[in-house]
Image (cartoon, rainbow, N blue to C red):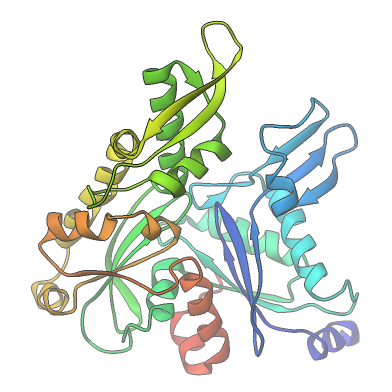
Length: 343
């Protein structure tokens, strides 16, 4: 009992965006203190952790048989509980300089369509990683708060959060999600689409990290003005197994991304089908707000504006919008009481 009380005295509250691609942590009173890839490198023989975050991501596709570089979250939820727990413990312990008494209160962002079993798994992983208390907030709500939308008002706010594993579309009013749609199509599926396109069109096999680089440099959802761009892409020729280099254009990358991008674009009108007319009228005035790393795909806001005939804006810093929203929840007692859950 005394140990628990002392732990509370020395704890620092944390807001955590436990994402498929990246984990971000916000400390109350300090802001964002950690932004690392959600990757862990494990030594297979003894299951020890060799690296976490950027160092582990650099090992993806480059490890020998005795080392596995693991991404423990898939589609926005935990796929490997043990590795997720160890990753969280590493991050939390590192932030607190491994002081034994520190057991922070943690607020975690979770997908809106997460099941009760998945909620329990997230909560249990955080507790075993060193959290004293764990509260959950739905990612679209956190993104809307981070974007500065007036979710406390009786009016419609539409948020489209495109992460690494999940795209969530939600209409929010009076602190809650009135209606929403979630699809397991986001940044990771865009990377995989590029891998498959290069494989099919050019008979070349590339890795997911290289595909992500191509997406960032050349990816777009809508034709943009300016000169055509192209870059050299290196991989393994599937015919003779030898290293090979080709040149790929922005037009080809846009073609490769067409299917996942259109899946995301079609999810927005599908959400409107469930939206009460009063809230739909509000959104017609206020427009749609894009957050998440996928919002950085060039021309995506233009495509969504064309598909919905509504104004679409991208927040200033879409990558950190969710964790900043969770951080505001952590710092505001009234907001905390309105949007967090413990189940």
